[in-house]
Length: 285
Image (cartoon, rainbow, N blue to C red):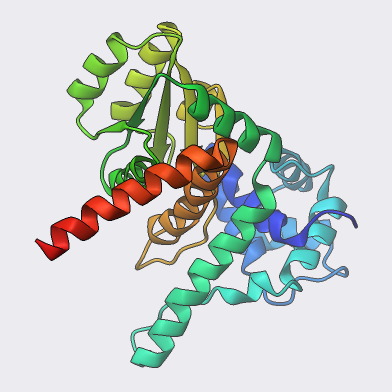
């Protein structure tokens, strides 16, 4: 099997929002089955979940596998990978040492699996769009807004000014005056946030290039973007997916920042020295 095992867990999770409640319940049952092996039959899975064998086959195809056998082999391959074993649920009796290890390992898993699914050609397109843009708007709400501000801060260090918007009405106002010289980076874990989706649709209609950072490749925000960079995370019941996803998204955007700076390294380094000196002068004042 040539597929990167780190990508298999992500491939399954990215499809979950598009499954029916019953389909999602069956996937959860299969992926949590401790004795799942090459000897696990289609009939066994169907009986255990009280569904038809045809439904299981259809479900595996919805998850982008060729059928149950392909799904079974791929999931086993993933389960034996080092990255699959990084995640562990937080328990009420966990010590502080255990909590630290579980939270850190979940973030490491998110980074490893995100690296395995990032489309390099899409990444290169995003860097090119942002480097050439006259103006860059960053759209995000909630926790994703902090990710957007981090990118804005880094870009300012090398002389690229951006604007971060986290209010739905202001995003729409901004999108209304964008043109084909401009770019938008939209950050949404779920990819379903209407406060972000409506503005990017308007921005795209006005000619701006839209780059989406999201966990779900088939989400509304991904469908309305010109370039999509996917993150992935397993998370936990307590932390949710968002906490680990933000770590993965920060890494994507850090790499994007470096790729942009690399396109004109001399100017980037000159502006970096200027901004660092300005901050140093303020500290010494």
